[in-house]
Image (tube, rainbow, N blue to C red; front, side, top):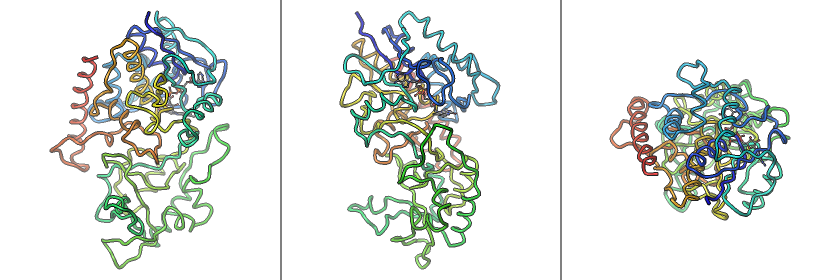
Length: 446
Ligand SMILES: Cc1cc2nc3c(=O)[nH]c(=O)nc-3n(C[C@H](O)[C@H](O)[C@H](O)COP(=O)(O)OP(=O)(O)OC[C@H]3O[C@@H](n4cnc5c(N)ncnc54)[C@H](O)[C@@H]3O)c2cc1C
């Protein structure tokens, strides 16, 4: 008899994982705590509830990485995409979804599947026996989170994300910015040039602080947090504490010489650090923020060198339980210390409905293949799935790991194509063509 796959959490990831494994012929038990135990964000007892916006973002599979992820999930017979398409609302090139009928239909389809049993109730401990996928999401219940923490250690489980904005490297103006670590610290040339510096004059700084103080901010939802935690105060909170606070914190101008203007001492410096092994993404160091997205772009583009910056993701601080996947998971999404447990969805450090469902799809297929005795290789790096899973299980810097959306900065460059803004359309088309071929090949080989 085929062994059973247990999945904890019937959200975006757990529902898709259950569908994929069940379709492969594996019996699945899906454990969902709602409606018995609720969260501050969920409103119903339905599986795959969308807790906030009703958007799956861009549906453009030629020019957008999230649209490409839609395409890959559709090609893999994904339940979440099928139901999203069935309940799509008019939204231009985006995919907006009629949330209640969508979630009701996902629930009905899973309950009607002969290989799926839905069991309601909270799972409070990491299981010791059998095949499991943990897909309990950003609002994983407290007791299960404690049990995960016992297994992974305090350092490797976060209860908030404090995301600094991430910039595409090729949109930074290198006529103004330069590579240098403070005091040229580091054993190797690479370490001595680990940071990209954007210099500010006194005028730039004062204007930046004014804009920061005036910018529109998002508030925490009731019950979302008991306050900020030390060491990752939002930049606007630092600025409210005093106009000079940032200049003595993340923007201190010491230990640096601007090669573009060696005689001018910068009044303040914004530093960026490489965010992925490919070197295509840079995060703005210490710049976690709760500014609204529109205001955030405006304020950040005041930084000399970032006037034309494009953002792979903007900053934010949210209640979000997630593990340090780069250190904890293997490329099959298994917990290295207990390989009978897989993780999927937002708890792995991806962010968003689509990315979470995608990681569920992958975990469901990988687990089913293992149970059926026909293990599957992780998908190729050049697919959206492969780029994302590689980022969280190895490509990202484990020390600064924060949740990530899918974006083209995670993709390996295609040789011979123009960089920068001008070449973008051709580059993105080349990424998506390459990804589709590789994904189809992976599906055919399964
Ligand atoms: C306040 C808030 C707003 C958000 N807004 C957006 C947005 O607008 N757009 C977007 O793309 N993403 C948004 N997100 C992120 C979004 O929640 C995720 O992208 C997506 O839902 C994650 O999918 P998931 O399957 O990993 O987790 P979820 O969809 O949250 O599913 C996890 C499931 O596990 C269950 N569960 C938890 N603990 C246990 C347990 N111990 N035993 C059994 N069941 C358990 C939960 O009840 C839940 O059903 C938001 C998140 C939050 C918290």
